[in-house]
Length: 189
Image (cartoon, rainbow, N blue to C red; front, side):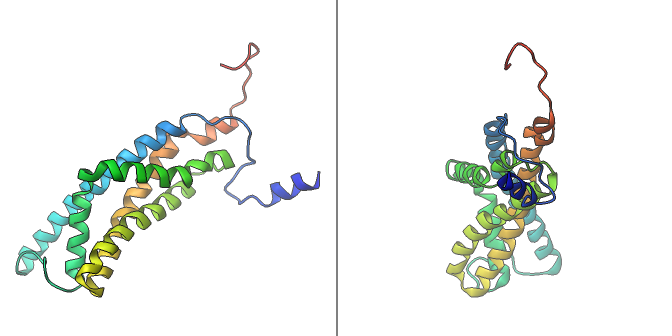
């Protein structure tokens, strides 16, 4: 009796009490979200890289910052790596599915039904995965390039991760699944 009262008081404000009921559509949501992560990182990389090249042309900079040291070369490297993300989908999709499955994929089982935690933790894990990868490759250009790659990759990953959190929440619909009362008298469906 005391353990149950303690577990209910230890839940965060955005969580409902955990239900032993099986939550459906988690695997589908993880697959769709990880595919969306790969595709959105690629699209954001191309769009932001195009905008950067447009800004370089307007401001009169000399073309690409490849092979140069500095923050902007790291930014450009991160955008190029993001743009080419789709070509390594056989690595990025399972990595995203694993990260999402071990973080926000467990939220419905814990009774977390609000959208904000899904967006927050999806963005955080996206920033860690993309920002960490671009940081490692940016380190080859020096410390400033690594910081540029980390910031830019983290931004692209956070946006893609928030989109994935939104998709996972929309597909699973944890509030509806955990609060629906089953009135079926003939057994489980």
